[in-house]
Length: 361
Image 1 (cartoon, rainbow, N blue to C red):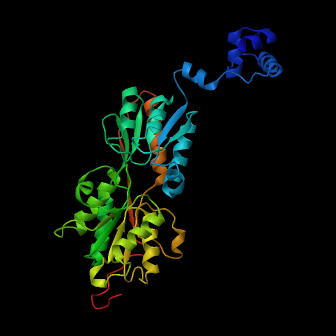
Image 2: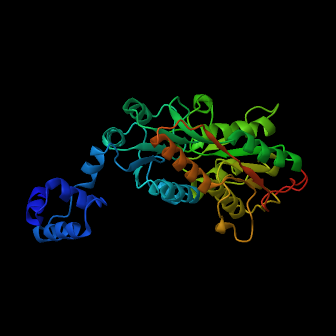
Image 3: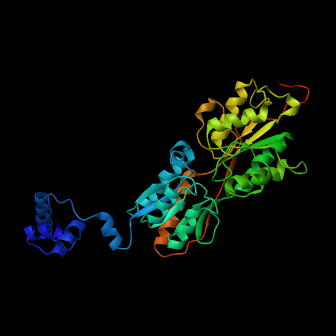
């Protein structure tokens, strides 16, 4: 069809192609004549994907997110991060291809194997053993990871998750808390909700969850053994509520005596923490009077009304921007160093000293 357009416009096929590409070497009058001929013939122009592949670039950056694409839009931190990443990638003249699904899902792996991408960003802490990563490294696709995967060939945007968790735990210890429990993020790709124990707890699947639990136990678990930990199947308020009921109630759903329940719950995200606060208050507990609750992320939590969550605040936009900059550097043939971003303890109104044993709720 391009040949027909060129013939009608009275130019060579190469000139017609340059006119569609916006090449400055083509006179404006010639470009106008080519576009008019194309309109008459109903031709929309060369396939942009085929053209970009001929140039050695697809102008597409893949983004691997949790096990469902809905995760990318339900988590406020992920939304801000993706928005910043899209801005950086857009400046390169490229767009984002979101890739979701369980790690060993054949459909997901087919997308990873067959999609023409210039680079891929693991945006939600991919597992080190993700088979999609093996495919990408085999294809020699540049890979950027935000908090993982931790593998040779992956260029990282990191957080000091363990150090940040220690600071949160130290805040609780300084307040006098000795009985704490943890609500973790999903521990690995095959997600479940339940007590985190045994071989599953010993496995290091998702690095962010493992490091945050390790940092908490460095302080609050010292000498007392592993802290009670409930694994969430997703990063959501609903999962936080379910976790709180498991930690605070007996098998019949009745509130445990004060001496038998934790005085503080460390949630590994703000969304989970909001769920814990909501469930605790529904059970008649005062937060922070009867139960102190902490989060992680520093996102807006309007569900708490006038309360401000005690949390470890990170810069979600900076995560996306730095990942985009690593992509740009890799596509320019550079070998960028890993980036480590700061995490700040923010003390809100959801933590306070524990009540004495004589004042049971």
